[in-house]
Length: 178
Length: 110
Image (cartoon, rainbow over all chains, first blue to last red; front, side, top):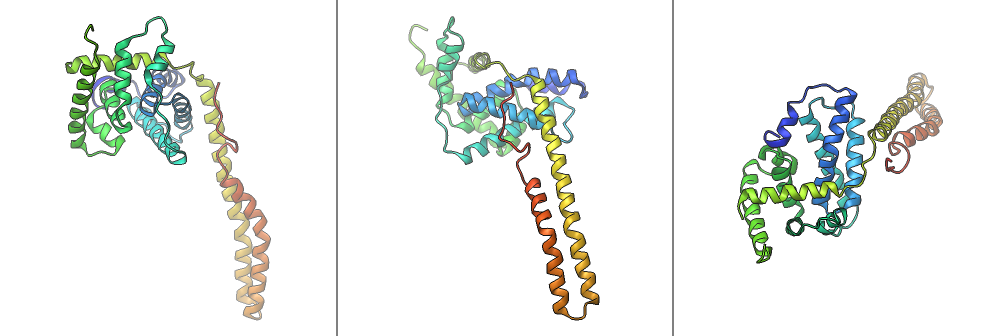
């Protein structure tokens, strides 16, 4: 996590006191939940995996003191839990992202968000992870490659194609009067 | 569409998605579950030690008896008899050691 928002997390003081954990939970809980919500397409799974990942982090024998390492640990645990869930059951049906977000924001239904959500939902799970971690969470290509088990150099290529494809898809879906 | 525009749209989506999350479990609840998980892990280590302690004396005793036994047959019979005595203790300890952490299905924190 060498760039962007997550890089700033690494500069936090290396203290593992209650306030630090509270701040970490407040910051990372919605971010991990959002990542899981978008990549798995399921609210219940995002709820369960986010909670379980934090329980495992807090019950770890030696919890990493640095936020950067904690974040990497958290996302790795979450990814393994999702993978185990996928092995245990049939692949889940993807819920459209825009339905839930529209329900949560009834006063301001945003067509742009709905279009972006729909475009993202059309991607594969791996592509959604790749895009989200780099573009939203600000992870470096090296860290994303490590988490997703990809070759370091291939992340840049995959991401370039992915972003081009998504831009094209969003341009096409845009209404003429937008 | 430009690349910054795509990033802007993704960030807007991220905000909307995060807003759609329900109320997260309290940190206190997460901490409680983690503490229980740690206690369970310690109990499993203890159970494994007990299992080792239960199986070791009969095996050692049988081995010592085997050295001084009048015949290999007698030594074998005594070794099996002594080891069988440890089986219930070993089984119980292993059942605890291999049971799921917490001993219950995963719970949702409130």
